[in-house]
Length: 149
Image 1 (cartoon, rainbow, N blue to C red):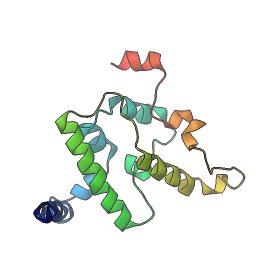
Image 2: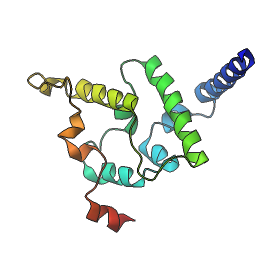
Image 3: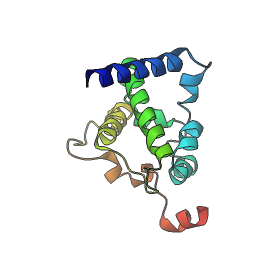
């Protein structure tokens, strides 16, 4: 049991070293929406973001990773990236990809961080921003979805 933890820690450390000091620009390249779409079953979500225009000027990681500090950002980028990589290449991802509880929490905090000036008169305690702002949920109306397939 102890040996597994040592091996897992060594593998994670090796991945961290490659990630931080590996190919030039790797850290930044993996933050681009095109990169996110290249490994995911995210074509419809990417198209909705690309064509939607609401948040077109920001990257996936601006919403989907914690942006409260660089350490938290880097740790969760590694965790989420490895999880997504493993799930995608193992074929576990379903076609209708969703967001985890942790992902919703991060998303909600990032919405509040970017739009804090607008939220002074809105009670956001038990609400998800996307329950009212449906256009930011990466979903097209079904007729558009069918025409893109």
